[in-house]
Amino acid sequence: MKKWVLVGILVGAVGSGAAFAQVKAGMGAPGKKMPQSGQGLVSPAPDVPTVETVLGTVRIPRGVMADGKALAAGTYQVRLTAQEAKPDVVGQTPKYERWVEFVRGGQARAREVVSIVPPSEIDKVAEDVPPGPGGSKVQMLAGNDYVRVWFNRNGTHYLIHLPVGGGAR
Figure 1: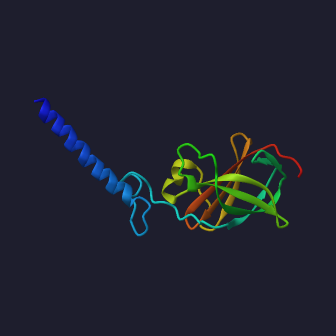
Figure 2: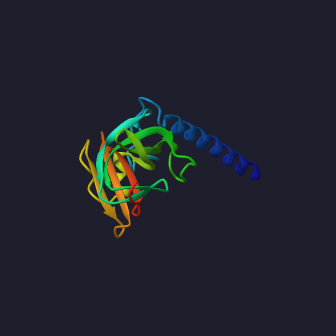
Figure 3: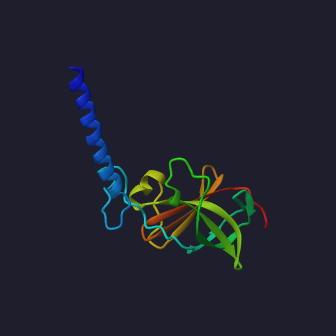
């Protein structure tokens, strides 16, 4: 009897290992269709630029903190860098946590971590209506304690959260 139980465990382990390897091999592979949310393990991976890319221009309505430094209210070009946020954020895929720079007058004034969210997951992350394709939105959150800068590029969402409290720079 013990022999058959051991054989059953071994067959189950080998079978599930092979199935896991097949699923793992298909994740993120070019040309492979990922399962849709609710149909499989993960949502389709967003198309994230690997080079420096301008996300857009926004007006920050009040002074905020970005990477621990004051960032004055004003209009900034927001540039996605190729640099992944380190240390890794628990629960996030590293390439989906990157640095952005707030640029004014051709100079980077501050930087902050941006969370990159696929279209199929945005409703789990933000309750508000997303900006339209190619658009952006700046919102006050949590009792006016945070400013959220939100870009939508080709359906992929870029969310930056900045605590209020910065002054002139």
